[in-house]
Image (cartoon, rainbow, N blue to C red; front, side, top):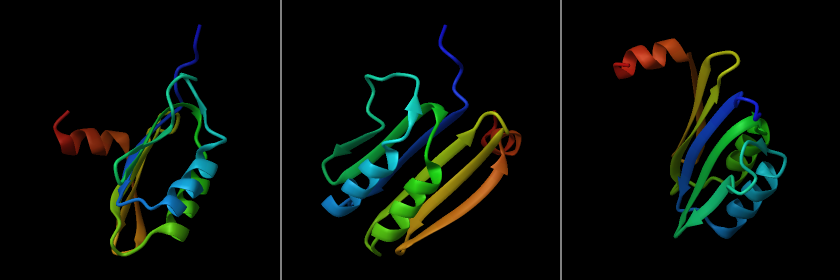
Length: 114
């Protein structure tokens, strides 16, 4: 019986150049997900997408790769849902910076009308 995911991570960055994509590939290599067939990182044109559900996601490594490779022209976000501690951390990618914010999932659900 598969274990329930402890975290879920969804995000995107665009336009994503080859250097940032390689850095993200290395950063997500340690992710321990639910489905081995599903890639954590995919490229769609000039956009890199991250989609993950599982036990462990190397959040700090991915954020570091974004900080080091982000340019002022790049935009996106990375949402990290910690289901064990019931918390959402959102990293907004804008103006060459990674801007984190965090809130309990109950607050996020209330704000979105759920």
